[in-house]
Amino acid sequence: MEPAQHDPPATVPASPAPVPDTGRPPALWRNRDYRWWLITDTSTGLGRALHNFAVPLLALYVTGDPAQAGIVAAIGQVGRVVATLPGGVLADRHDRRRLILLGTATGVLVAAALAAFQMAGLLGFWLLTVLNLLMNVRSGLFDGVPNAALKAVVEPRTLGSAMAANQGRDAVVSLAGGPVGGVLLVVGHAVPFAATAVLNLFGLLSVLRIRADLRPLRGTPENDGDAPSGRTGYLREAWEGFSWLLHRPELRGVMAISTIVNLGMNASVTAVVFGLQQRGESPATIGVATASVGVGMLAGALLAPPLVRRVATGWLSTLGLALCAGAVAVLPFVHSIPAVCIVLGASMFAAPALNASLLGYFTVAVPTHLLGRANSALDLLAMGAVPLAPLVAGFGYAAWGWTGVLALCAGICAIAVVLAFCNRRLLAIPASDRWEEHAAANAREAALRR
Image (tube, rainbow, N blue to C red; front, side):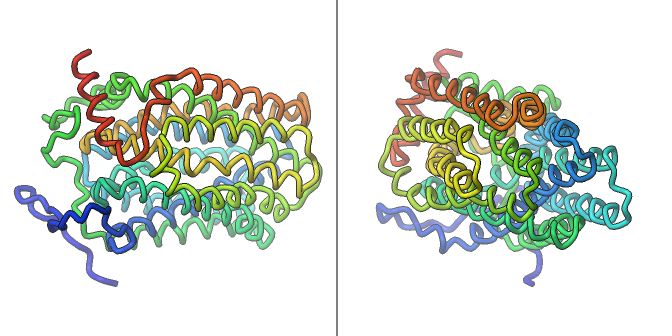
């Protein structure tokens, strides 16, 4: 392993060597720092996928009750949401490389504790709830840091391609998480958590290979952001991320839409997992079913890069939402494993292009010194209702069964689609080659309204 790279002196910030402008974006995959960033984010993401797959099933084995399993997952999600805002402030205050190191080290410790307690036969309802809460708090504090660091690793012209590539990576992680988690659970209930610890350790080692300066305070204003003037307290600094979002007219409506659709989609997938487990399917079979989400995302990720470049972001994201909601509306009426897999895959087919376009535009628009807080504000608003998803799935399945709870999830997704088609500001966001121009125009408008 190469020696760890030390940060340059604060008075001489590192800057990339000038690259001649050939009219085409530089090759993303020739960027060494981006490759190591992707390895870091992928390894920790796969560890997170294994943990999130294993915990609900292990909670069902421990309690035998979908409602109690939903409580375990919901408490963890609440912890993640609560920790998201302070995590954004941390990402904008401190060296993002050191934060990634701290986050991965904490992940190693908590995952190892889960594995050890399970092997000792001590992992009951309350201990599982507490350790899952700790892992999710860790996620809220540190999982957004790599995204905040991405802008320092790639050039603005390659952000769209980077976001599309990340969606492909997420698809592979989602595809692998279910089957791998299911197989590991068959081997032993502690094994997925041991694997999570190893993957976090690998992420810790990989981030040391990134040479770019990942410190957030560069003193260079971007778009409508002023250079940071100093620390003003966690609450005030966290509010700056919300304030920036609330003053951007093209993004305000996206927040409510994201909250609603995330609730519907997460509740539907969790309801499928609970339903399959309750009717006696094996962990491996459930893993295959959830892997179909990754298959759909992977297929969609192959089309995402050209779509992000050529199709207006507003229309691409809105039509993608409609496709996702339409597939969820079919779920209540299918029961066989092959049919469930096909519909789940279809529900996620448009997600990579949708996410790459909206998140790419968002990253271009946000000033670098605000990226951590703006990302955490967006995550909090988008994921704020997600802790309700396991409760909707658990209590909904217990009350109404497979058809009833999935019909409720489809109705939630339909509300998001209606709101998206009614949002003229969202529909006006252009394709990626005009993101900077559109973001600058909206920044000027936001400045005039303040």
